[in-house]
Image 1 (cartoon, rainbow, N blue to C red):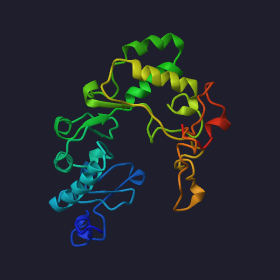
Image 2: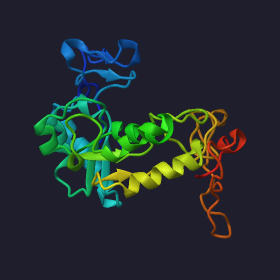
Image 3: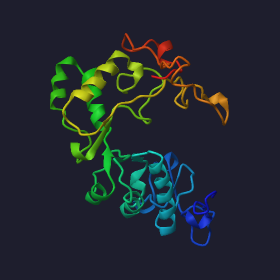
Image 4: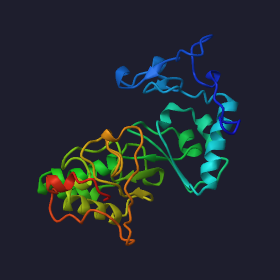
Length: 264
């Protein structure tokens, strides 16, 4: 810990009693995302040591990191794996600063009221799926169903939701009409416009990013073969103009265009 207060010690992580080097439990694809006693809060995820945020000392450390982010201009947060944290722990770390927006990674669970009151909004990916399914995948005779679109995950109302139109867990190597990515070309553009125009939802996220050939790719200039260090290509060229992909003219995009490593 360069600052002193950020020095982490083995006892700051969940571990077996009397054995600070052995995790209490593990969770990930290898466990089917199942945890002992249906409680994943003390488990290492993807083999990463899990901070014991039940300890006030650890929560204070995490708050100080958040405070640094806030003071350099960060005004919103996405809480990854939010369900793996107790509500009181998240509230204690998050609610000392006036964030503009906090939303939680969420899948399909019914939202507990205390989590709604004390943590933040919920990512609702089902809403996007309903939209894409009706615009691209169903028979045209079922298109009118789109006019009844009022939400996604059961129990999450529009005032509790953040609706993302694309996100890191929903990508495909090539164009796929069931998955909302830029690789679908003009169809994706049409879906984004409907997403913005439809009156349901107070908070929406429209995707902007970069093209990829492989799902492990980072931004342009950072490919798997680059080793541990790389320098992303600049978004703007020497002339000050953005170095972005051209607007698509077809659906889906031609495969060679869809796999270009450029900013979108």
